[in-house]
Image (tube, rainbow, N blue to C red; front, side):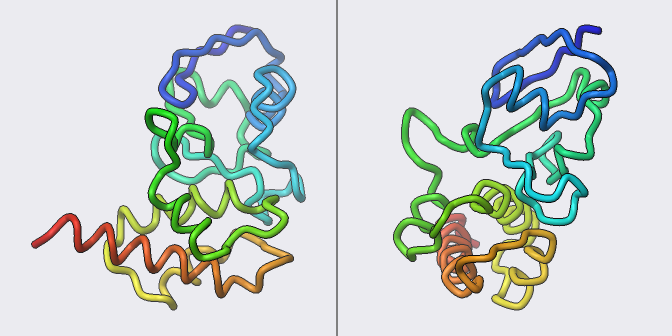
Length: 158
């Protein structure tokens, strides 16, 4: 079957079998390796993408379900070759260690903070509940998200 969707702002068309997951198509067909397979059960968040702007587990999403929809991976955050301010905050706060969970955490955090400007540390921690990180202990991750959230809220003004 042919599936047409928008990936990181660009129209894509792939020929695939209907039983394949979005994660498989992203990685194996389109070479988008930033979405990771962690658990293959939708529990770890490593495969998180934004589907029409909302976090989705690409390991559980059958590719026919993305027909006509928008898929964003962490690559889709850059603009004009520059990191997104949230990504810059992760770098500035040392919130990346091995990096395996980072794409899913970034996309989940971006979605959550855009929907909940000014979120506090506890709200951010709860929002990341479906994203497992085995390296950082989350403190620096939450620091980075909180700093970006405060800066974005201040820049938006009243």
